[in-house]
Length: 114
Image (cartoon, rainbow, N blue to C red; front, side):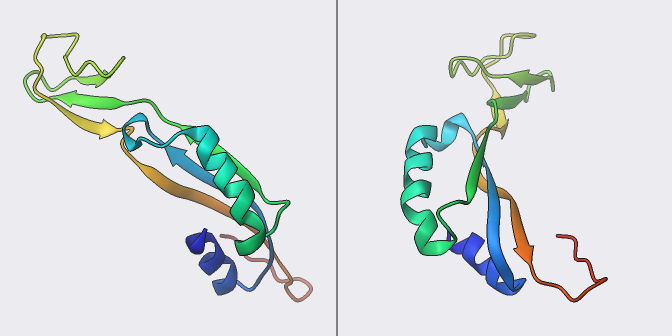
């Protein structure tokens, strides 16, 4: 929320319309708890009518043995192609801010793209 508030301040926003975040399964973060926290904190940092969009990304990995990209299901870190458990995570381990949609007051004829 501080990041969103800072972005809004930097761009002289009159309001924050939407916040989009990414949550992966390895973050240990529950979608419903994030939504509840956002609802509680939105009025303090942005506004109570700001929408939160949560993008849940799947757990992805790369097999270090055969170099195949794999989807990791049920937290089984084993390559379906070669059976190796020598896997490193390439996605689904992050909780990050993806996008913030703001509204600003600009002089007539001037547009700003974020």
